[in-house]
Image (tube, rainbow, N blue to C red; front, top):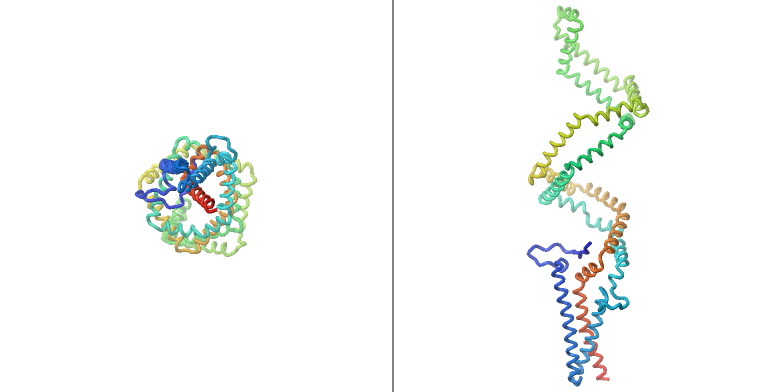
Length: 446
């Protein structure tokens, strides 16, 4: 696992030079070595000045030079020791409290994870940040733009293409088919149908469906087209079952007109009966329908023989070769269509996804109530999930840092801040020298 530097700034354009946070590792290593050489040259220059001042007897101005050089050398060496001790043992010697980062890596990993968890991932902070960002409104603005909708559609098209390729793999498809088949084989269809029917009939909802079906039937029977069809059916049945009666009627009236009148009378009788049933909650037909539904629910739930027959029919249906061939054929046709659509950058499917995304963005932008509702649900979901997720994130951070090799940890941190630490060496050299001049001035004036 490689430790990466944070990059809070937006990415620079291709023509711009990368910032210090985004420089390649090779360039950062070169700059670090350059600063090390500069700090070493400063130390060497101070040693040379010190040697030259001693050679001149430290008289006059050379006393000031010697005082500056001595203190500068001490400051440079002290800061060199401190900087090196942070990453490794100076000169490879076992000085106490050196190689701090590698030696204390487990403790630092735990402390860093706790710091991130408590300061960045605590629930109030996350909720406040989400409320300030208003991600639902920002998502709506983003989706409403044509380029954003097309970008999202393109990404979803690529994702769907990859998922389709995975599902279409013979091994994956076989595994999915076997898993679904086993799941359906274990399904108690009879009991499930009983529960579903019981839910559908709760609070008399089945009576509403029954009434609606009767009214629809009455409306259909009352149309001229249906009555003509009914008349022809009645004449056909009468001619087949009661030919003598039909011929007798034909002697005194037109059989077609007689059939239409009979059909109209039948329609009026059916319509009247429907009104009676619909207007009377205690009508015998309603009560009979209630009993039939209740008996069916009871049989579905309690009758083992009935349940066995239903589940046996289900199993035969699942393993019917013709049905399986039909399902495979449908899947092959659907897959070919999807592959064609997903493989075409400007396909109708992508256009539809983009249009749907734009409509969603426009709805989010125009409907404040919708935005508020979605924002509330988002905040509620984050509030419920945050405590568990923050502990998982903290554990992941700690485990990742503890898993880094010591050399890798040292290298990455030194590349990230090592150049600034070399500036500390340079500052230590300069500040040490200035302190030496001040102390020499006190001696001279004292």
